[in-house]
Amino acid sequence: MENRSKQQLYNKLQALLKELPWYVEEYINHKKRKLSAASLLNYAHDYKIFFNWLVAENFYSGELKDLPLELLESLTVQEAEGFLNFLQYQLDNKELTINRKLSALKSLFNYLQNIAETRDLQPYLKRNVMAKLEFNDIKESMETTANKMEGKILIGDEYERFRQFVAFDYGELYKDNKKLANFHLLNRERDTAIVSLILGSGLRLSEVVNLDLDDIDHSKFTARVIRKGNKEQYVYFSKQAMDDLDEYLQIRSERYHVEKTNKALFIAAAMGPKGTPRRLTARSIEKLIEKYANAFGKPSLSVHKLRHSFATRYHNEINDVPKLRRQLGHSSIQTTMIYTHINNDDLKNAVNKMDIPKDDE
View 1 (tube, rainbow, N blue to C red):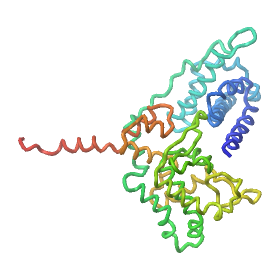
View 2 (cartoon, rainbow, N blue to C red):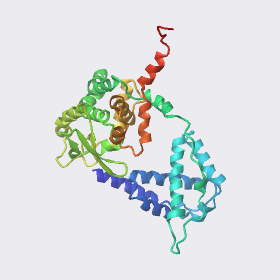
View 3 (cartoon, one colour):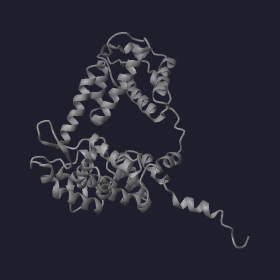
View 4 (cartoon, rainbow, N blue to C red):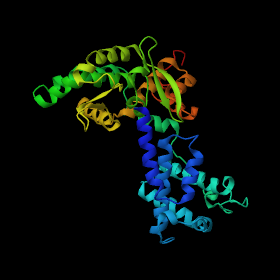
């Protein structure tokens, strides 16, 4: 199933590349060994946005797939900055997203100037306008970002209260609504296992979706996942998550009418197009978390915020950034460092003590 999901991404990528110039496909093929299908698809989408902007601004009037290299080479810095201004307006000043799109363009232009060669060993581009553009400054400090995140994640006893809510309290809350109550009764073991697994491991949504039965090691409490960059890793999860998974697995086959050949760990309640049980999709998991989060009274909670919740709790209890980085599958330790700024009780207590008068004063 995991290979099928990856193949679906590649199919979408190939369909998109048919709309784009030949040199984009050449660049994407060059990056296939290093980047995941999802990353490549995001790059291709970013290039389409840029090329469509060139058409909208009358730099070019033909088909996107025929857009010539000469146009890219002739863009001035001011014209290229116009695209960044367009993004800033469209994305409502989301500096990180703009930086990511600029990074994608810089990577493409760098390939065209410094890596790709014609038959006579000449670069595709002799002039690279994107190399002259600077990334937006990210004004927020890690502390500011962490403080914003803190109100949107589970803290303290909220971890267990939310798990209990998914397992039991949601059904009680809607016991007078037969449709909601019965649907919860049907899926409560599965939904509790999903929430418990993310809260007990910090797995990404895509990693949870692609889990198969054989990926779970019941004795070591590990899950085999394919992380970004197609790296295989065995990720530890909590005993509570294992208990909830075991409870779900006891009812999985009979409750969802699953055939033995279906190895997907999490199964959808609704049947597939051919009347057979299917793997729960990423969107379905997002929707079920949204449902429970709204009913719980914390609507900002999402699958990704559950991952943040795990990371915050792990750092508070273990305080080992390198281990947390590995657990989360971060490529950069800077990404992991944000959790060192969330719920910093030591710093808070130190500041509070400044207001306590000393005996000898």
